[in-house]
Image (cartoon, rainbow, N blue to C red):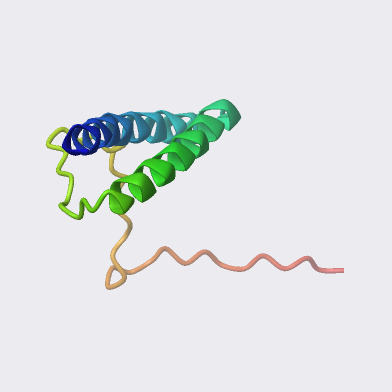
Length: 99
């Protein structure tokens, strides 16, 4: 039984890393306005598998947290800073059509 718990924990660790990588790819595709249906379906399949593994692990009595050290996925570039509210804004005169 202890061997099965260790196997489940290893699979969960690997699956979490794969899910994070797939989600990063999906977000990149979304940012490029590309179709990400395939990757999104794969992430959903991984979540189904993960749910089954978590249930099996809980049924075997394992409640210890699973720590994954390499979950760092680089974030996308930061957006340019917005104009501060206390700075005066450029106000353009309204143009009204005359009859």
